[in-house]
Image 1: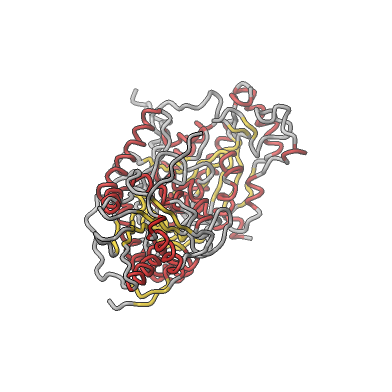
Image 2: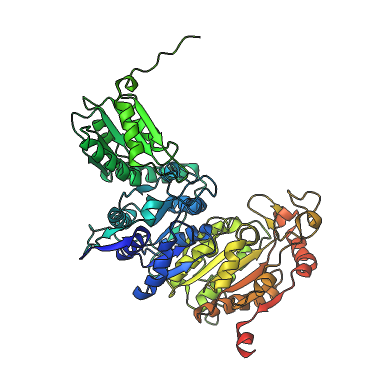
Length: 366
Length: 253
């Protein structure tokens, strides 16, 4: 299939449709509204269901009801809208239903702004709603990867009977790039959806719920979820290394659009004779913990530089994983400010200056 | 006993079990009416119920169909999502007045206005039962609850919301009726309404809702007999019984 030039939001919409989600529920919000506009035109062509609801609170719960049919279901929104969906997401995770949610992040908190940001990392990765649950979170850094991960996310949602979130910033939603959709898209086999509500004919009723008043039963439900998350940690870790080399002194950790910008910085530094590598997590939950640690403790690595379009969120996971094995430096811009390759280069060069490297300051005794 | 014949049995749409409802509560009667209608119209095997948050969250323990358990007030949103993808199935929500008329007001109004093709069984007892008797948007003026200990002060919190009248202002819903179940005669009328609501859905008409004036002796602080009297003398005065939207009249008119 030839490559076509597409806007990220539209490419994500088409990818979802091609992965078998012939229904979509939405509420408009910038910078992801093109998903809705595209599918409002496209769904009738494939005999699918398109519905604009009254709020993201309703959309999340419409998604919940739709997921109970066993069909592939999805929605998309941006940060404030995703906050409103947290109620439903918690219930969907508790009731073990599959669904896909796309978050095209904008700056926050509150109404924030409409420009690209990565400040919903905590909300996505640490469980934005109440209770012991996790989302499987995938972060594309190009439009092609947004297509590939969106399609994959439906398979993963079905495999684990758990919500999957594709998280991109406004840049991923708004940027145009050439993309290719797979011809004859195939997936590994999945178990039958024998849990779906299809009418209690010749069987006992199916009851999809998250209420367990007996604490032992509720704990057991949480443990069932926990075991799925442990399985994800062994089977669904995804990451990419860029120009890592044994002679590098600095390892950059960055994801999504920010990782793309870091790649440009790395290429430009290479032309200046400076070698720096990038570690890019693709799955934010499960986080590629072992893979990151392996890269960080390489002989010559002296410092780790985490760069985010936030005031510092993923950096806490990096600190947790590195466990003090190397000093960690953070650089971030937020509120819709996207760091330029020049800013990234400046940070790297600052770190490379000997006096800024290592040697933690001694604390004076009081 | 050859001349003996069975004239009254448990509907197949009702499970054979003891309910957790308090003595004098009418959830049991309403469950049975829904079950009888599902049997009579032969819908049970292709029906999905959506349970609310409140005393009737356990409706799925009694009504013998597939069920979803919704977040508080969101049953109409779940029903929307399910029915849109499975228009061949019969979908009903079962909701109390706190669930439907307070936290879920947005979802019910917009589902009704979109003309979603499901049926709502709305049980209005004017109080939050499960959490122990707090004021609801339907609590009557002056009625004492744990959060209106001096009686509902309408100067402070407004008048009780009349859901049928409110939804009747929308052009799309097909059928809205308020019924009571405190006397046998009213139960017979209520059953007719439930049957009509589900028939509307079978005929693919837009949105049907039956509001039941129900009781909560435990949290009203009344005996079951006094509660029935309360419905007759107090509740029905403010919430008049009757049909607020009739699909057949609409066709004629």
